Length: 320
Ligand code: 2E7
Ligand code: F3S
Image 1 (cartoon, helix red, strand yellow):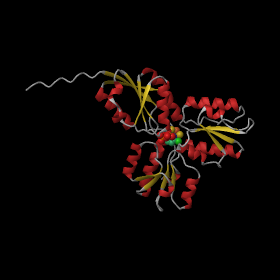
Image 2: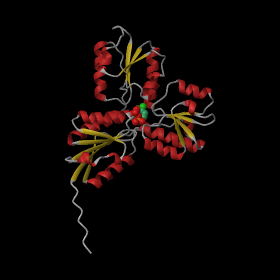
Image 3: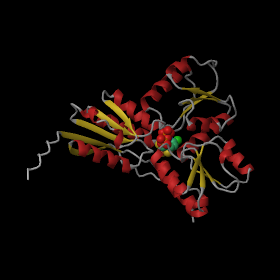
Image 4: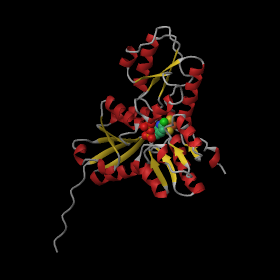
């Protein structure tokens, strides 16, 4: 019998995995709320909007008995409904209560904090300049905390220049939690230059998870020629990670899972970075590492730029 052909040696690849990456405390809490609600009430439990922006998380919860819908009127009477981690306008829980639905709020507590601050600023008579991305559910939810017209959306520095508010208007600025730290700083600087008396939030609205994951990418990116960001195309924080890498001068690819990797991307590449957005499970990170190991002789290391210990309490209905 002929000896089998020796398999050609795989070229080496250095893999640098960023930390922190992946699930944040708000995502852990939101997923646990759905799981515990299914245990408590029995399936099905309805969830308004993807609990977090990741189809693998959503599919896993569907398999356990969750049903995902976009609007409350898709939820039948008599079943519990959960609001996603991104938050909802006040009208949504109000409508659920009016229908006698049992509801649970998986809004990240850091988003709820922004909601309360928005109400406070409006209560004190200020108009809010809200820095965020139009159409994102978090932005829709936060705008829905205050009367119509009480808040203006600012997406760019150019939007600040185009604002049609008098120089002495009583203003406060606030932001979405998952923005680019650098872009937001530039927008805030533009707001402060135009309205020097503008009221600032007591603490930064961009959350700890968003800023930690961006800082980790900034540390890893200069070492690599290609950076993979695991996350969904509708995940704001994941998109920002891909942008941060790109701006640090490294080509970045937002991928949903290992099979999205085109081996041609690795041609001529000897160092790859890897991170994951706040809604991407660690199982997908492991899947990507395994795929890279199939393609190349991988030596991996982790760069840790912060340690996260934060966790959030569950809603009182779910605490035994
Ligand atoms: C809620 C909030 O689900 P995500 O991808 O959401 P984003 O807002 O980044 O599109 O990530 C988790 C998460 C982040 N922020 C959930 Cl307000
Ligand atoms: Fe909350 Fe930030 Fe995660 S706002 S859901 S801790 S990305």
